[in-house]
Image 1 (tube, rainbow, N blue to C red):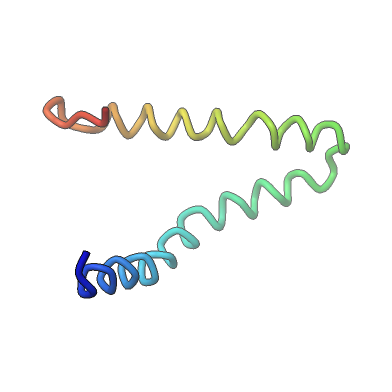
Image 2 (image 1 turned 180 degrees about the horizontal axis):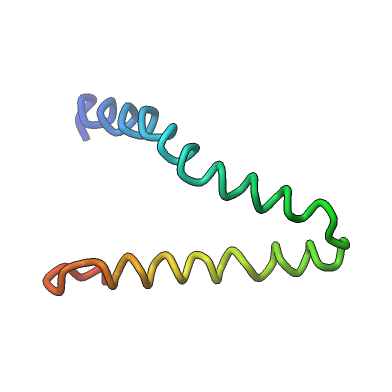
Length: 73
């Protein structure tokens, strides 16, 4: 890899991070605030089960939105 490619990759990640904070920050904050009143057992259950479900939903929706000619696998 050339140095220019490494610098470009670093800069894209660095300048792209505000997008991630802006898009997911509100969701994470709302989820955290909603768990203030939850019991410790419920918190453990939600933390253990909800992220994988959310990940699958995002992947399925993104695949459904892609044109047929684009394949992820």
